Structures are given as C-alpha cells and as structure tokens.
Image 1 (tube, rainbow, N blue to C red):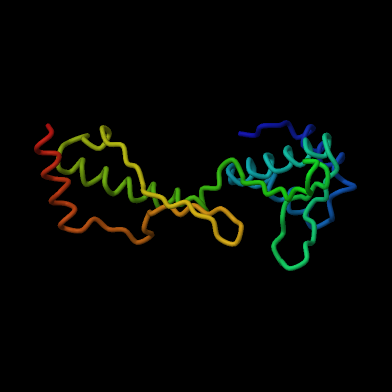
Image 2 (spheres, one colour; image 1 turned 45 degrees about the vertical axis):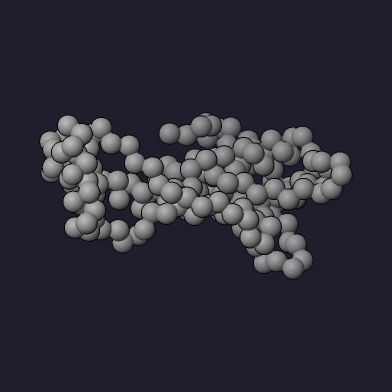
Length: 168
C-alpha cells in the first residue's frame, strides 16, 4: 500500500537528482519497487523526508565523514544555526531490526498453548516484551528481549496453565 503515487515518487527523485549518486538512486528505486511492502514503504519514507529537507535546507545525501565507514542519510550545514546536523532516517517500520518477527512467533506460541488449555483463551491475552534502551558511541540502541529460539518450557507451561485455570 504505497503512500505516494509513482508520478510523485519520480518527481521527488528528479528533484533530488543533483544530490543523489547513482548507487543511492539505484538503491531507492529497487526498494521502492520491492514486493515486500515494508521495504517499499521505508524507501518512500526515506525519499519523502530527504525531498522535504531539500526543499527547506541545504543537504548532502550520504556524505562521507572522516573517521567512520557508516553511510548516513544526510548532512545539513544549516538545519540548525549552531552546528551542522547529521540526519539519520529510521524507517516507519523496521520489523527486522525491531525484533518484530521474534515477538510475533513467541506470541503465537503462547497463544497456541493458552488455547490448548482453554479454548480461544489466547484472544484475551496481550503480550508485552521487555526492552532495553541505551546509548553507545553516540548512538541510540533499543534491544527487544524476544529470544530467537524461544520455546515454552514445562515450568512456563505450568505457570500459564495454573494462571488460566485460576482466572476463568
């Protein structure tokens, strides 16, 4: 489900043409046309934000900064008057980075087990995962505690079973 029409996306790309190198333009075009809607939407968000910034301030897209090999989305010398601004765009939905797939899989296991204890009980559950937010080397990180190989062990099954039986 796209946000913008193809015509609008092409127009934004054309207006950014003097700021995009060929590899960045190719990357955006590939992601915009990707069959995975989360990748396409993330590319649309990135393109639209870069385009809007370019309309407002001077920007350099994917600048090369000394001392780092990371590719940043943009650098603006005049977004804020007191210092140049590095711009890092996080997509609308970075499911792969957020732990979403692991959270969904774990939730489904818990719902399935709960339904085996009491029919359709899983639909009454809401599962929240613990996360840790921290800064390291000047960057913000969020780690979702959704273990990749999670399996419901016997002890956890006993706890869930007792909780369901005592609350219905």
